[in-house]
Image 1: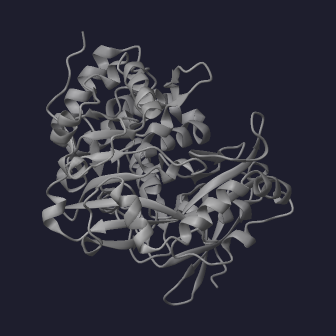
Image 2: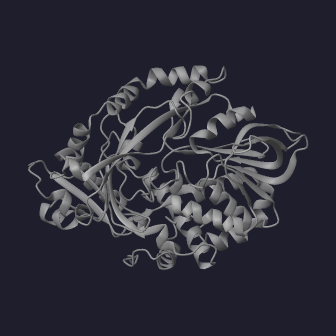
Image 3: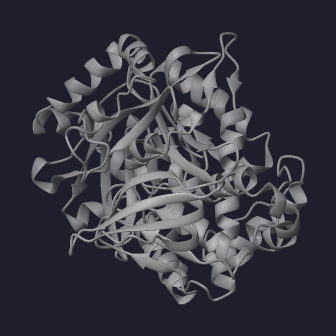
Length: 500
């Protein structure tokens, strides 16, 4: 073990989309800062960011029904959908800036236009979808969305889904052409190529084993080279923990007060992938349904057209399950190891509250292939077992913490930044919308951790992200300009509605 720690300005732990985004932002804002990245796997974007581990929907709340809840009076709360849509617009702007600046190339290698659709069955669900459509389309972000409960129209939109459908139940869908499919694995790899060109030191097969204070606003990180076994110590003024599900155990090692009374609930997933290209070509949309009662929001069933390695593919899922691992490449002891004296009551309270969820996950885990095919046939009535294979998707760790509204041991569904009071260390926890809102999350890290520099950095941030600090709800003209610009630069939908 090396006795003298090696000094640097910034350490990023994990080579996923979050570290890639934060690194790209910092290199634009403070190019003189020295940045080191440590990743335990052999390549960038191999865990939660990987294209086979991530739904790649480009979450803009265009089709995800769990972002719009129905209030007791029957009206639809669209506030979360508006917020997530604005956050995704930040990502589009930053990616557009990187492409225009020739810092990353070939946007079609990571983002493609694809219609986003919501599909429901049953009188009550159809009524909900219509109300949702009417509530959303009063906002400029959702103009261009169409609603139909006419089976003939639906057959034009989604022929594969409507063919052979025998049910007499009412059926309806919304469709909007401005949706995207994002290959976050490819984007992550592009961003790390960009960072290496900017002299960022990226160390693969290096596992961070400990993080501790090394003086005022200074952190010491203990790192093991997994090939040689050699252990090194590195110090930095700022550390970001962006290790997906592995972030929580590392955050706990820091001992900061903000890491107390936080737990994690791991959820695993499976997808079905179509191996018949003739079937793949019959579908061109991301179609989201409604989550079953008791199912977590990340288990909303969806039939997705994806572009992976520039090839059109078709995925259905996810089927949720339970594994105590916090990462796909993690340990079966991750969950047990994350239980500490300061969070055991929080975790126990969550266990009592979430018995129904645990039961649901175990039921999902025990599904046979034929039972999964039956769920697929709710979307594709004529689906044949021989046309579909099962793939294991990534692990997600939902945050558990005590909240004022939910009480002790409340399961959080979302993405969360946790940082120390002095801003010298931050971690990204949680899941969906995750990667899609990486730019928003990393701007939050900058705001929390570098408040003194933000005034100096603001002009550059606005150059990269024109809507930074501005509500797009209140500025339809700016929204129009941004959508036109990002669509042109990233090669997205040319059907940009003109706002009246």
